Image 1 (cartoon, rainbow, N blue to C red):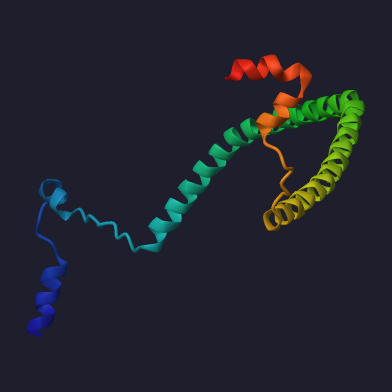
Image 2 (image 1 turned 180 degrees about the vertical axis):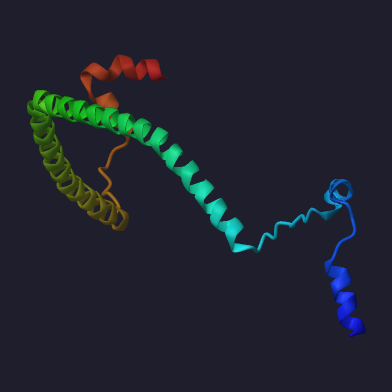
Length: 161
């Protein structure tokens, strides 16, 4: 019974309500429980994801309008370039055809030149081989005799001396 009397004493307060309120106000700052945020807590991550999602959505609204305008401007520019390209191609088509014809003629001329040059080169090689193996026959007179025998060359021959 001694224990049950202690429990009744504990349950029955002899403290004045005003004193109790003052004591509570005095110790209240010490009684506040501060929960440190744990970075591993999933609730914090969920909140961060919601914040990031809202930031992305607001940035997307601004950026999408800018990108749409940029896309439209680029599309118009490409259409203009395409139409100008077609116009220029139509204007220069006859010149392109003339150029292609001139290229074909040049190719034919180069081919004929190579064929002709090959024949000349071959004949020159044959001539040089033939000339290397044969010595020219002696004509029986010297250059001086030849010049002296010509009627119009005698003054020239005299001047050479």
